[in-house]
Image 1 (cartoon, rainbow, N blue to C red):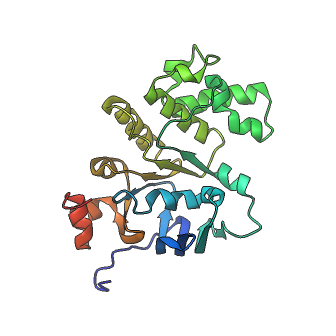
Image 2 (image 1 turned 90 degrees about the horizontal axis):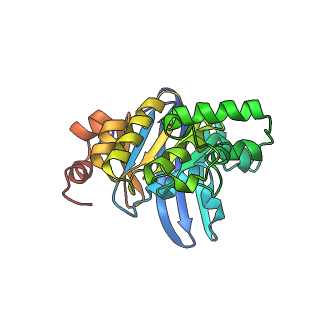
Length: 262
């Protein structure tokens, strides 16, 4: 690394601190010695070619990768100073604190109402006034309330693709997470629905820490405060989005952003 111009910057108030993180599928290594901090209550975009480790990395943050046989990690990820891989960590509580929205919307075959409060019911919350308030608040935050308020007890499977994705965001924020992970949340959506999701992310910025994987360079530049560029499992460059996109430190970053490869 060019010590005169660091490609990775320090964060004043990180919520996540990644130190020497490597990940292996059996003997095959997918992530290589990642070191960076993720800022609190801002939007961080992860960009890079398919297969570079973006989705693998964010699934480490809520330990979804634990479900994969033969996978192991070295190094650490600290959430508010606590190593999430420590044996004392309650994984169920971790996944409440770190919500997830997937590439393909995955509403449950239940009513819109029950989708939103699913996590609360698992947590033992059953008081109807509390649930009603949470449903309205979460759907309003997800910019969906006005579209579904008259059919809350109808199946969520009748929603459009864009509405389903916003419902999944409402479900994620209903349990008041600290972090919301988004794995290419707009890749299966039309331009109008994509615009709704981007506007929603901007509205949620400052209330939640959002980490989004995207292949869309324009989207990353529009909605994120910080951008991390990964390539072949390595962190190539990380910094303020405006700087990464306008004056990247690394030639590889410039080449990817301008479409020379990837």
